[in-house]
Image (cartoon, rainbow, N blue to C red; front, side, top):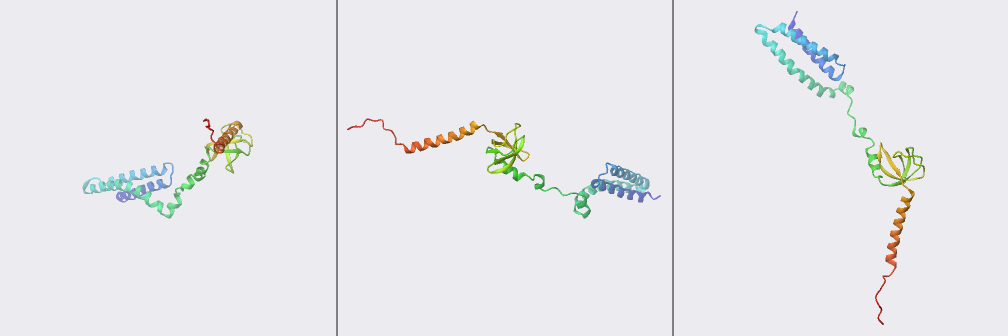
Length: 201
């Protein structure tokens, strides 16, 4: 029995099992076969070269195994993805747009936070609202909101607006405050200043 030939062939076979395990996960079966093949390879090398003048060949075989194992793994990880087979086995990394396809839409919706709108449908808790003239899907903060109710955008949740109902008093109060401010400003411009001094004849 030619142990030297078996030692070399089993080392190559064991390294091949290592490469196969990297790209064809087998639940540890290929890893076990690789360990067994390399172990038998070392036994055959010991039988073939241990003792006498050929002992140096045993150590060279062991050194080759120590060096070739990481080189084989590293080379496989580098070269195989660039081959036709590797491209079929290994999936390409997803694009940034595939990872976060709604990023641009989220940015646009975030600009509506703080704006007022009106419910189009019943929010229970999801539904449709109209904000800045656009129909947008929205959810309430847990409370049911009837249609045609004024709401304010409070935030975003899963690519939907989070809205809160505005009391009618709050809405009217805001408009009243704006009208009063405008009226006072016009009055200050139109009315002449009052003179409380005495007029001398």
